[in-house]
Image 1 (cartoon, rainbow, N blue to C red):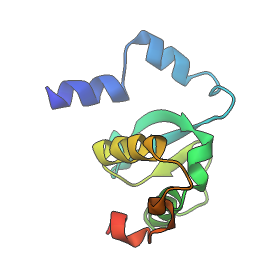
Image 2 (cartoon, helix red, strand yellow):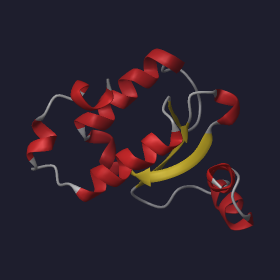
Image 3 (cartoon, rainbow, N blue to C red):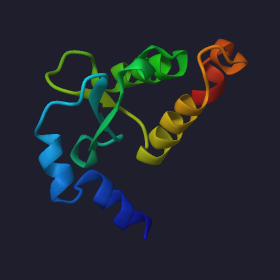
Image 4 (cartoon, rainbow, N blue to C red):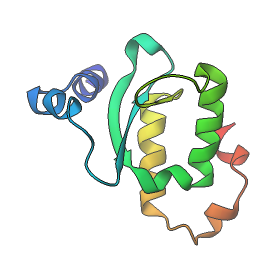
Length: 109
């Protein structure tokens, strides 16, 4: 079942694949998520989350994996479920919470 959900998330129904060819909505960015370039999923997320220290650390780690010179969407070297959990966590907490001030290495290592 998990594989089916992952495949739907990555490949999606026609509506998802059609949406993927258009520009993201205002305030959103497109990202490729996955550790293997051949199996990455194309997702969209709120752009405001890019400035959170946890996400900045994830981007730093992804830069080590993929480099920073490429065209198109951001590439995130991360398991898809971990990424989805991080996005859910970031959306559920505010930037003023104590978690925002904690070291990012506590969460990602």
